Amino acid sequence: MSQVGIFNGVDTLPPDALFDIKKRYTQDTRAHKVDLGIGAYRDNNGQPWVLPSVRRAEEKVHADKGYNHEYLPITGLPALTGGAARVIFGPEYAEDRTVSVQSISGTGALHIAAKFLAKFLPERTIYVSDPTWANHKAIFQLQGLNVASYPYWDAASKSLLLDGFLDSIDLAEEGSVFLLHACAHNPTGLDPTPEQWDAVLERLAARNHLALFDSAYQGFATGDLDRDALAVRRGVRRMASVSPVIVCQSFAKNVGMYGERVGCFHIVLPDQSSEVNSRVHGAVSSQLAKLIRSEVSNPPAYGAKIVGAILADKSLTAAWHADMVTMSSRIHAMRAALREKLVALGTPGTWDHIVEQCGMFSFTGLSPEMVRRLETQHAVYLVSSGRASIAGLNEGNVDHVARAIDEVVRHFYESKL
Ligand SMILES: Cc1ncc(COP(=O)(O)O)c(C=O)c1O
Image (cartoon, rainbow, N blue to C red; front, side):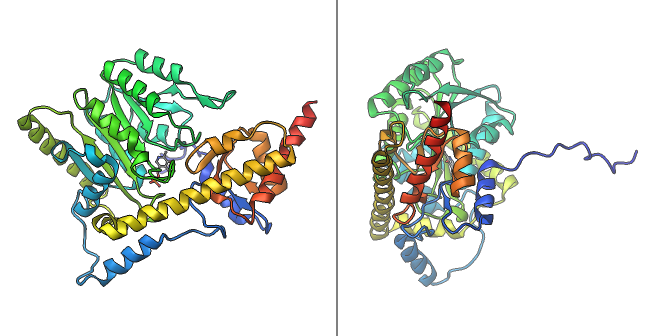
């Protein structure tokens, strides 16, 4: 039978919401347009910022004799994977129990997690926060895994639904997988406090669940890479006698190498006898190598060499930490400026949450209708959920954004009176 029409019934899907915002923004000819959509750092002139530490590392890598474009090993560049493990695990790094492989940035690490879980634990449900990063569900569902959600954000009080979160942990079938944002939760900008993390980890341990940390913003919550690793480090310590811990690590944002796709996937095995640890370590490594070989053969080299160089050199690492402070401080200052201007304008509502939230984003509380009006009337682009990438604000546009928010809030506020 003819196969000519076998794809004729394939459904057309809508474009990706986030990348579609970028497209509309690019096509917009208004000079005062502002992009608060995609989470990418911009400098005070609204331009992408190549970190000074990255520039230095690039010079170093190119100056090294014998620079070439050879393939990397299947599991990636050891200087990257080892350095990355040290950055995220710090003093909790147990090398003999940790399998680390390079991935195609954070998304690729999550994809490896999904593939690995689909192969070895296909019956387990993956619990994600409500709300969460738009891509999480798709990544796990596309591998045939069941995805459910746990309460996280209370829109009315703009605070953490800790009780609901803990109840979900208690009620989930034993051995479920809980995806946790390591810091700077996307989209809410709200992280559990250290005490709340302890409560979460206690309950996860009590139910023998697996923790899967997504670390895409290390350094953006507090400006300090170590402080931002608190949840992962406590998680690794608490779960050492309970279950493996998975960590998906991205260097897209904190090294500003978005398009170079640098990331790592780690599994920290629980602490068993050294004989078992070594056998399982070898077995898991071999399975990951097979998976990566069939998917990408071997990971991209350029960004890995740059980040590897930063992590292997004390002075470059220190420069990177300083760059992190530059980025997070500027975002912090922009949060304060936006809040201050909204308060000065007397915009209906309260705006303290803008400065209380952390990381790249603010979950503004603006409705989808308000977001639409911001775009059409004021050329200010953000995600329909009301998530604004604060990194897109600068001294030149924050006033326009504040006035635009003021206008749309009043427009809908007054039409309700
Ligand atoms: C929560 C979260 N996880 C993972 C990622 C993956 O990012 P990338 O694949 O660019 O490293 C992102 C990117 O926006 C994110 O927000």
